[in-house]
Image 1 (cartoon, rainbow, N blue to C red):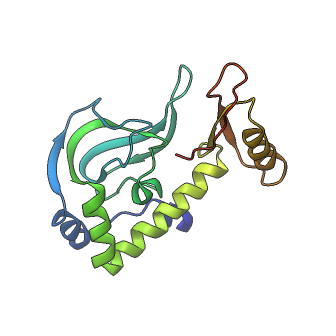
Image 2: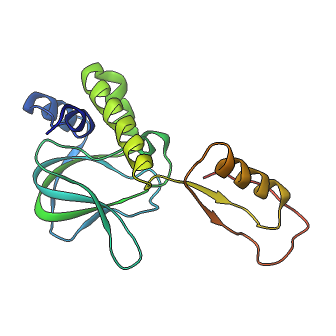
Length: 183
């Protein structure tokens, strides 16, 4: 494993895992179980104790494998902290056990344990950068394609910022009102 991937996908030590466990609950997992679905708001944080969990980006007909976690490794990227919807799915590929924390307990852990907080924050940021670099982390622009404001933001994101994005039209015909909402 390269230094970059060790920082992006680190393995916690046993003492670190024990400190995480104090903030969450240990539970069994079953092969095929979905721990996180794409689009879940504020999904759970987990550390794998045994077994294997795959992180995938669902696609048309076939999922894109991003990473597979084993004992001592943890899920997540910046959306866990911000409470935004999950970009990926977490699927158990080999039954085992995990420590599971909700967002509130994850935030408490990051604030109270500087060592673990630093490891998690670094990994979350590097993972988001990796998702964007691989074209898997995108901006979703919601708005009518007939709205001048939506079209300005879309043009800016493509021409100036070069963001990978998806557009979801909220109108099928011209509408007299327009607003831009972020998710």
